[in-house]
Image (cartoon, rainbow, N blue to C red):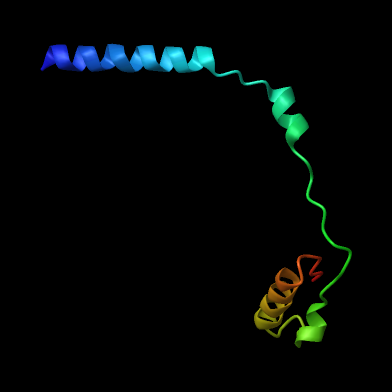
Length: 80
């Protein structure tokens, strides 16, 4: 049992060392490939989906409807 555990340890250590040597983690190259998202210039006002301006009233359903409409349209903003 001990030999098997030692053998497993050595194999895993060798595999990790080899993987670390092969992998080139160039952070600058990775960051250069990242592009910020671009959102369409349209707004989905929650008031148009029956949200209330009264802070005591629950407007969760209107907010969810505005988000769903924004998603269906391909993006935009849902200002609160």
